Length: 263
Image (spheres, rainbow, N blue to C red):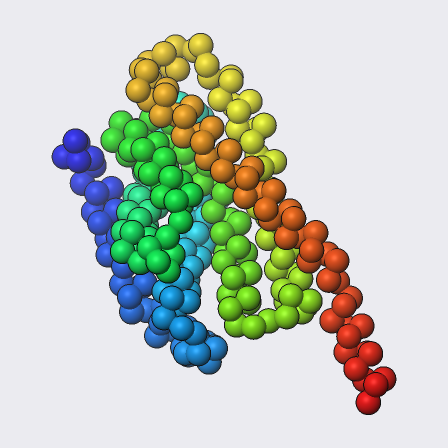
């Protein structure tokens, strides 16, 4: 079935896989050691996760920017939500698919360090859905809409970076990132849910919808529902963490003031 893929998209996907593997095994460590001395002090498991998250942030930044450009300026995709011209979205999904396959292999190979069943499910469900866009060129608008979720990834990863580098949870950098992470996650993954399903509902029952066939319809609905359930679960966890962060606001300064007085 891979032979049916557009050669350009297949080439982009393979190149993406190679670049993200190279980034994980070589570039991340080389750059990170020069950006912060704290990287060299991490144990091997944390270095593996650090490199994984660095690559994740790089992917999210590239794909997220491309996704926003398509949403705002690609009239061909936005004109027909089901059968709109898919070429630009396919390029973006080829990049993402290369990353997802690369990350899946790393998760399995380094399971003790970064193994997570939720990420396995997330990656497989996403790849299953993206196959229909890459192979048959359908539902490009909806696939691109879902990729908006990547905007929250850098903030989630940054929270982990601050933690392993020993930043105080009450530090200004940690608090600002925690608040931004919660806001962006909510905007990119939660508040868009009713908008997304309103658009889905508007297509159900149309000629374009029936033309998709049962396999594509099932992939569309199942992948969307599974991914949104996971996003809601993650949102609950992030909200709890954000509440703790809000409670820390001012504590760092108060503690420093107290210590100053005690001297």
